[in-house]
Image 1 (cartoon, rainbow, N blue to C red):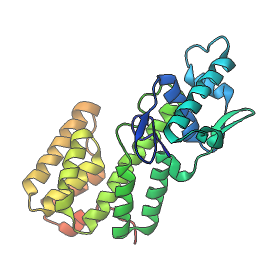
Image 2 (cartoon, rainbow, N blue to C red):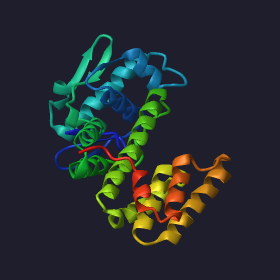
Image 3 (cartoon, rainbow, N blue to C red):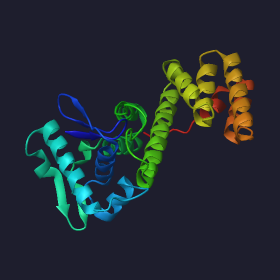
Image 4 (cartoon, rainbow, N blue to C red):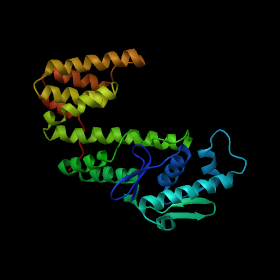
Length: 259
């Protein structure tokens, strides 16, 4: 069994994915899974699930929501599963889940392993980590301040992992293989300077210098129009390296962890 937070909140069994129905139930599961195996206080849970106005009998409402979560866990994973993983006690509730049973925890572990090993082995670990994503993190939850912070951390981690993976692939000479991915990433994240710089290097190394220069012009325009700033020094240095036909300098602008 795995709780999925890297996309719409869901419970994944060995055979299928069970959507969690209801914004408050999604929020409860996301709060408990993101904190697993720690207990979250009832006061915190109530404040995050009902951020604008708590119900009159908040403890009863939370207990009823926990009962629904227990039923969903049993339906997805087999009768009695909830008894083995739900922690009930002072000051609140928790889920006793292993590192591999919450996809966001597994994502963090795979990325940490990739950074530790470096090189070609790291590419495979990063790909496994990124494959866990099914859409924007924490889909279906309510307006929880806690989960907004969790979502921001996870989404930033996704971008960092993608960038670090591509750095290694470029260092391994796989510039042609990453071109399509980089073109998609720069389309979705038009002012992300790391992706733009990587795309410029990949295009240059593929013999497409003009397109590399066009990418610089595109992101410069996007940064000036959207944020009123000029490209950062690393991006300007990459432009200079491409203009000089200086491949080693272009490569040196892409930091790579040691194997």
